[in-house]
Image 1 (tube, protein in one colour):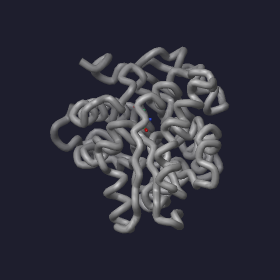
Image 2 (tube, helix red, strand yellow):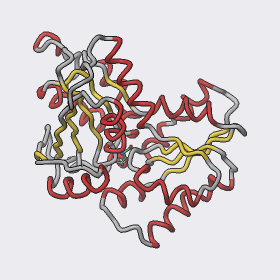
Image 3 (cartoon, rainbow, N blue to C red):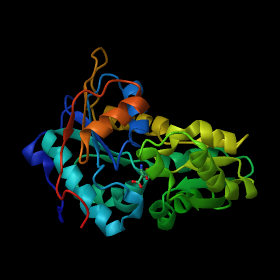
Amino acid sequence: MPSERVEVTEAMELTADLAIGVFDSGVGGLTVLDELLAQLPAEDFLYFGDTAWFPYGEKTDAQLRERTGEIAGWLLDQGVKLIVVACNTATAAAAGHLQRILDVPVIGVMTPEAHAAVLTTRNRRVGLLATEATVRSGSYERMIRAHDAGVEVTSVPCPRLAPAIQAGEAFDDGIVEMVREYCAPLRDAQVDTVILGCTHYPMIERLLRRQLPGVTLISSGEELAREVGESLRRRGMLRPAGREGDYRFACSGDPGAFRELGSRFLQMPLGAVERVLAGAPEPA
Ligand code: DGL
């Protein structure tokens, strides 16, 4: 992992015609990519799913900083003009670190949801569903309180949820029970707004809605895609409209499993998925 600032501008000038790099521990970041593809159709995208290292929710901050540094290095080698950390766990642990060491803009997923939740709640009770690492980091609470110190936040770690979604498990009674259990503390706290603080969770939004009737669910894709577009426009790096952008996928684990699950969720063909280790094959 680079321990000092990585000078990308020397090796390659950042221009509009480069792709946007997006990564997550698995298929969850596709919920973010989906919005990026819709809002920025002229852009090219390179998506990396770190499936050999999944789940990030059980890793330490130090492991995640090192790993995401390796992934960012690979994305930069491929030629990207901006990196989207499409994973809440990686954003909480490492986005600040990546912003410090890289010369390309790095945009993470937490700030837009925290802001949207504060703007949305009427009773100033906000719930959070996220991985253990994200809840432990306290990042959402800090961001919410920076906007409104009077908002009460109820955070629920959901260690089994992202792994069930990533494994492509059927929507059976088991997953319904799991969702019911994780939503119970939020119902007890009478929150009126819930942040889906893991990019995997919008994939089961219907199940969550049923357990949280009348509650507004906030996820990252839409706001984040707007921020990416604005960031590129202000820097003069936005592709002009009128072309159809390209996309390609890579993952560190089984490309066949990624392609199958990914095309099911994204509802579009993924094409050939390349297997890329981007450093260590799996955590030590
Ligand atoms: N998609 C990742 C996130 O947003 C979580 C899954 C994991 O534990 O790797 O936090």
